[in-house]
Length: 521
Image (cartoon, rainbow, N blue to C red; front, side, top):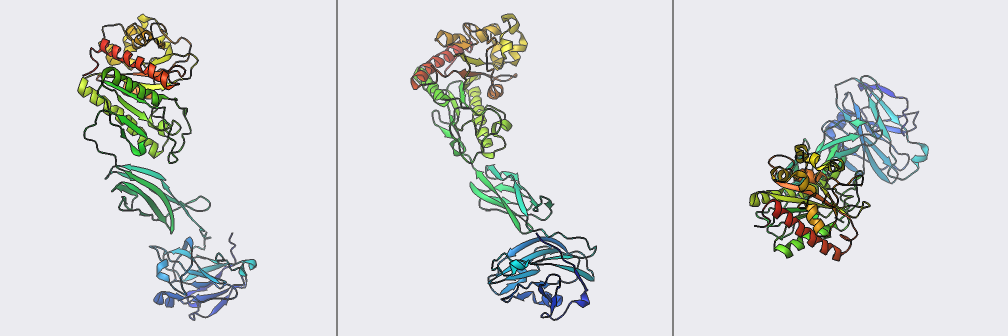
């Protein structure tokens, strides 16, 4: 902590012209040499000599101006001769040199120019006696200069420069994003100053306003310097693989293989958002929302894909999140899903983007199709829960009530419900409903002929993916269903997954042949 002493006031004419003249501060007991301002300005070089006794600050008094302390820095000169120019900035000059025993340390105080004056106040802050005998390089003296109004000047010991965002991702060459930088002193107060930006220009270029633009794939450090202090951030430029035509059965991966897409050739899209196991350190853990994993649902969706291949020779489109749910929840909107982590956000975009791409392919190739989002539940009753975005209260209604247009319009199978000759309640829980075909295979589910509604039992209605990718509006031709699976007997073992996968594949095929009139090309 610095302590201010009584100040010495002198006019310009009172400043000694002899650079070897000593002026002692009785209050501090430190010998001080005042260098002539004109000589210093003309020479711009200072020959620093060893001091083998008490440290002696050498203080350059610049041309008479109004000064305000901006910042301080420390520097160890490589030789006895130090060029003063190297300590200049656009609006500051560093003017205080301190010697310690055995090692010289240059301690600079930046002084910002204002208007000329004819009087200057110099306050020398003393070095405690105990410190004068130390040989440590940190033995420093400080100089604070005030003028004009005589207001108290605060010497800023250090600044912390922070950049937002701290970690950032640019997807694609030529894409841009903004960085912002602020400086704060030790008390947390904002300090103004010009920001100087830098980066590896081979990876990303950054302008003076903080706008960074991707140049090539790679990672670079973004640096922001304010008043001699620097903060850093990390920027990655990710260039996705450009795919002209997706090959059926080939796995395509996003950044770091967090998301996998296996294109198919059936009018069926299937996704598994909650079965991933990757927990990369680069992605922060989510701090709110559900983080539990739907065990074995990745293995389950791959088993269902194999079952379709065995039964038809063709496969559905499959999208898998390989990230653990504590890192990403692709079945939520992006704020809750990724929680501002740039790498999780990219994985979310890839997951959602590939579902959309598969839907577009089905629309072009078939005109209509279905989307199934596969999950696992831990409810007390071992049965499938088929989610159509209708609540348990909705499904608890009578068939007559459920046949109302309002329920058709709010469901995720609006397209199918609008065009089917069957009453809507029969599409949901009749013999030819998906639940009906599964029941015929020996798989219990709700809604179905045997379990027409959840009653008061726990039931998942369908989440973000079903709302986003099911048919909830005019023009949407891909109807969606969320399928929640209990664990025991369905997804607990490889054998059980194989048996159930075949049952589900047969049920989906039968349902689509009944209500769409087609299933394969």
